[in-house]
Image 1 (cartoon, one colour):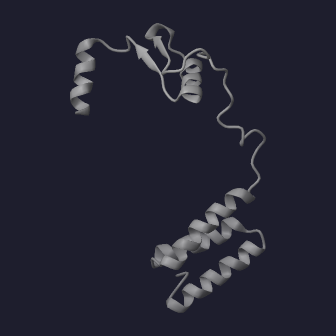
Image 2 (tube, one colour):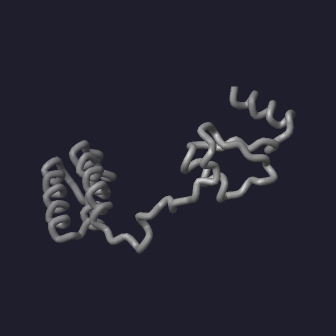
Image 3 (cartoon, helix red, strand yellow):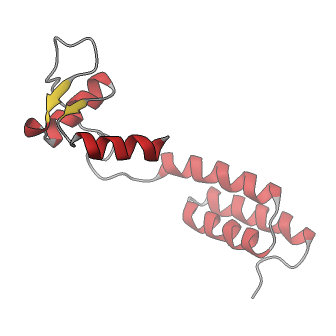
Length: 125
């Protein structure tokens, strides 16, 4: 059964979604407007959906620790003021995570030979 059958039903769908939000039924409101918008795209419904999804995120119960992401990692390169560098033989998740979290990137020397590097360079170009 269609959620909306006419332009007037768009207003009804928006009103019903507001009622559901007032009851704390965020998922139901989002499902209702998503179905209505799939049936007939409407800028008002799309705008309301974006707003509802944003607001609903702050209303849902998150499991313990879900907000603590990414987890804090020790800076393994505290003396480095530039991009940290490591040889491929030392590559680890811990070092990459540390470099990205504290320095924004990492250089891993010896990850590929000259021929593979040239192929990648050409592919990028």
